[in-house]
Length: 121
Length: 110
Image (cartoon, rainbow over all chains, first blue to last red; front, side, top):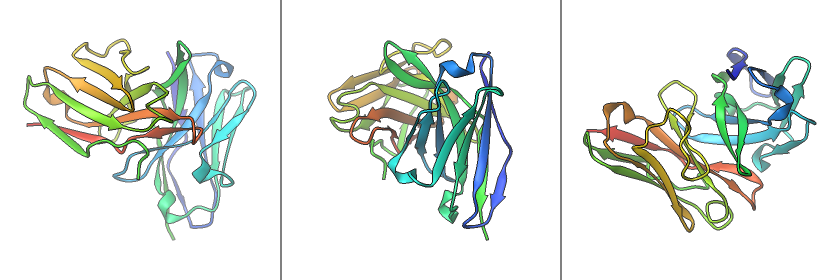
């Protein structure tokens, strides 16, 4: 079955960068896109962006343009999320989510377990 | 401030039917499907409803979704204690070119 396994928790200082990985298994990696969604403590879900696992095309939420980079490595079936210039309000759990398609519409049926990124001086 | 508006809380007694609303605009709910996610504390979101009214396998038929105009609803009938958790709606926004979520609704079973 489909599994998305994310890298472990990170503690970073303000201004630093963080990379979170998401290793996929149980399906042909290049067939489905991956989105990244974050959730600050006690808050709701926030979509950050999407990458096509097929060709690497990306689409970023306006809020994160210029600060986030999504990449993927098809040889290891792994997606990566790089976030730069970290601030305290970037403290959140970061999830990767695989898209699924139904009659031309999309949804997130599979999620990683989440990675807590703490930004603190 | 979330693009989609959900009530922060909802409640019902066991066996009751409750609905959770999700209000948007023409650029999101008005022109696209709605997905609903359930999130238990400390865990990743779980897909509950996709394409507005479709249930994934394993989701009981006492859970349903609907949409009218720029608003969507999640209905849970035969309320059970295990339903007490957080629920989020989501839709694609054509103007923002992004997925947008509601702020979430915490459902309490009294």
